[in-house]
Length: 485
Image (cartoon, one colour):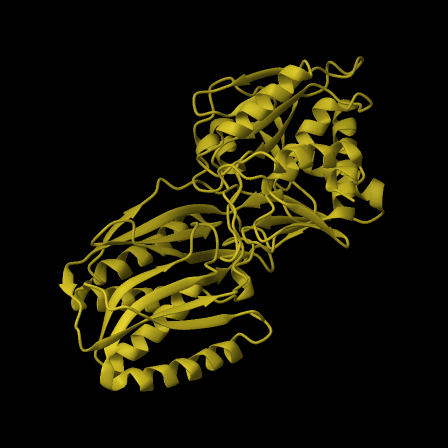
């Protein structure tokens, strides 16, 4: 069976079409064209703005023209992660999906259900002729995953509704009414090239197989950070033996916990055997530390040819120390909502984009604006002490919960009527675009909900089939209840 044959048929057919369209962040041209063609082919009013956001409009079911306009909101782009042994070009290849019991997964890559299933749901609403609803606007934003660019630059008068349903959550039975704000902090190290010592042996050490995951939704799970695992070993070696660093790279996206990292370094020939023995011991120690959390952690080491150049020792040691000691993970828990992470930071990636430069990217989140700025400042100070040039992104605001929200009440009532249980009302540590919409439209009444997904932002991403059916039924019920207000 293919996913297009799953029930409810309308949403799964739309999702199947979405998975065939390449849509990396910052490269949404193909998915935008797909959405515009979809609207044209189905006689749906559509418009775009300067940054590429798309809004489709659907008139109310006859007799419900006076109902409030509801905005259905999802983002076009997806996180593009793959296992290193998988050949996949996210710029042109469709996602290879398959059904695994009650789950839909992808073969060795991210699935893109974040937020493709939200896009599919909005498309399905546009197509459904049986649905009872008031006026609807479907807003599809660009570049959510690496900067919330679409929400930050939404064109004037693109949306007119005062109720917004964000379709970008990942837990059935939970309705979200708040989210954390975020900011990125980037450290740039500039090094001098030195001639690589000839009396050294050079090796490439890599860690892979980590779970990674979403730096907001999964940060509290205590998963290993590949960059810190590698930096810890290199720092330990530097304290014992003469060594030199050639390369260090790991992680990928700012909002994903790094799953893989590697370093190329040289060590004096006299200590090469000792280093090999210590690496074997270290790999076992780390695996024991993360037993039950990282079941597939893997270390690889291979000798490489002597390079011509390496990093100067002062900068390389400062960088390794900084990565090893940089804060990562949960900083504090919320005092207002039990179990909610309040503040966190993610040591996301280490890249060498050009000669003599190393870029370390981190991201900070908090539901308290001052705490967000504080942890960003701590990370800045940390890397400044190591001699790096530090910059921050513009950041984005959080979404403060409104426990008197009318749409929250309607959404909760709809879920209980359908499934016989009260949904949990929560805030989420991950960032949503809602805070940005609220900044420009302070009268917006918003909630966020979706089907159950796990492993988002990693090749383990999967979406639960039964909860997609519940998500679709819930969405339709909410629209019907709003139409009859």
